Length: 216
Image (cartoon, rainbow, N blue to C red; front, side, top):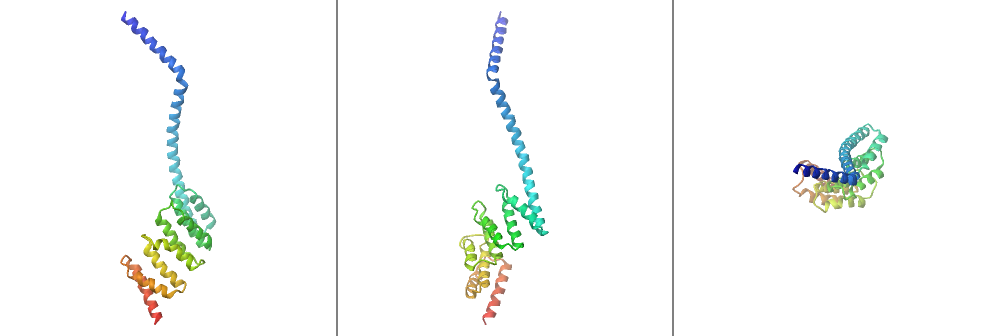
């Protein structure tokens, strides 16, 4: 007798499962399908992203090679393509590459714009932004003293690994624009700093000797 009740109970459970399946089968299948698609998409994204990074890397080094070979149009195309990808670390390197390309190609105005794109972008690490300021001043032969000096001010007035280099460049700017007294004063201040490298101190002491001899 108990076996009969067990069989009836089992049949009722099966009937309930069948009814539930008929009612929710589409929803269950959809959920399973979405899970599978999500997993496939995630794996596909990882593979795609890896391949994309490899492609961007290859394009960057190819751009450098084209630049070395003075194939400016091809190098420009590759650097531009990489510089537009904001999520890639090669974007910053490509912007520096574009600046160097324009400098070598005699396009100083375009070079200055490239460096400005870097140092105006607050999303870029301050070290690279300061480096862009320094390189812009070093390679700029067209802008005024005030314009170039103003680019160095943010580095000179705040702690930075590049501050000592900016201070030396400031001396060079004074000399370049024939501001000898200002150059000598800045040089004297700089020579008293203890954080200079041996090579930098030798350079500055040589400049100091030259101007002291010239002054006599």
